[in-house]
Length: 165
Length: 118
Length: 339
Image (cartoon, rainbow over all chains, first blue to last red; front, top):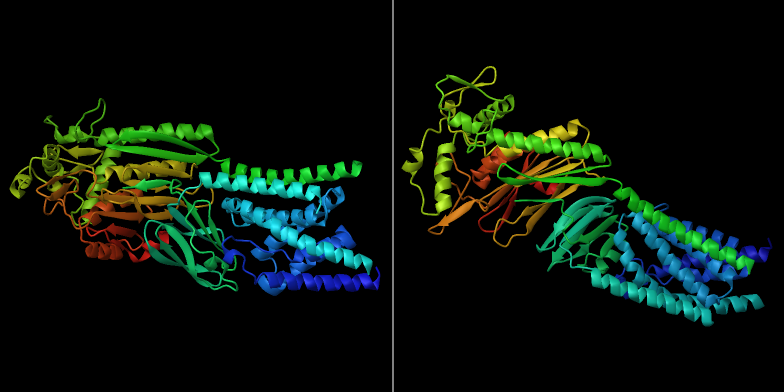
């Protein structure tokens, strides 16, 4: 592994951590719907996925969840499992949709955003024993589209620029 | 963005809106609120009585208010106060989750009462 | 193209996995089934629900329970006689000149318990109140007025010593007027609950008019029981949750009539011979359903303050809630543990 890549991945990781923490302070719709987030960290994961592939993306994603967990909510807390399941499911689905190569970066980003929500809702249903959470899923899905488009467009720009350098 | 992106966006929007319509057709104003702490029910509240209640959460006391058949969290100790920001809920499809306090509030229509004495 | 098919199959498998997880969760909740039976005995509707996977056992148990209620219904019936058993009707209307009457052991035990409760409650539970109850019943049915104290007093003896139990399941032929209405239901409910536990059916819910008796919950939860608002509005004014306990309510709103703007109901104070109106209803949570039935009646004959003191001194682990005449709710200190 070349030094440039290691340095980049390290920077990506810290960026992802900062973005996750940052976005937890941004209230969306004043907290009306539980679990609503911009998913800014997804920008980083998408870029890694396109530049380096699935393996590196999932490493960074897991490390991000663990680090944010340690810094904010405590390791292996319920919130940790929320993020973990959302992150893993989203990255797997993004990889699959990227390989299908029917979609652009924006499409893949939307998929990631959607499955991040789905993963969280599924884990909430099990861990909190609240089947009712499923009723929030449509709202989360609707919101996943604009947030997916925004993160997708930013990622696309970043990927293009970084490929050149 | 290409055509397929637009297709999937369209597909998701349709699915979500249809689900929202279906959910809103079926939901009812709830009668009973159930408070859970660490997945164990700690309080059952009748929403027809205006009152405030206090339950013990992970970070201390959680104050809950019932008003006009709606329920909300008014005070709790957590970094972001997400669940007190969520405001009132009153439908049987709504849920308040206070993750830092490990408190969940669910609403049901009261038909799930196992029995009535009187 | 081959690659893409692989990934699509992968996606489908993943989705299938989550669907399967959701279904499995549903399955785990639903594998225990509810078996229920509705009956009408002792002047009240009784519903028994058993939660188990064992269908055959549950059906057999429900049949046996029906028999238990029928047996106690017949034994405690004041107005009808049944072939082959000496029941309360036979005891009260014994025209034989024999000095003693042999009765069923079950009835003997129940009367024994009733006399015991007389001591326990300083006479507030009196199973020899039949004459007075009959007078009130005829007034209630005709709604024609209110009996005088003299009329009630002269209707017959209410002395508990009229009931003399002898050895070998025999009772002295002393013409008492036994009415087991205040204890028989709870007593029988407890026998049914004990029976269910003895055969290993620990998850059950018995709803018999004024009381609910529950065992273990079938899904690691608690049973939620509503307490009916004792006014014409109806509905539920409180919800309590527990396992392995019973909730019994006594109220003035079930069997009553109103004469000259005063409400006269069916729970009679043996001291005044009149129905008291300290409050609208009282509900008690007890471990034992028989105790619950007896205590809800006893508390109904006391003011709320006296009732609280009585519980504190005699039954510290029993919790109660009162619905007052002013639509206020009063609770014992520990009652909120169940709310």
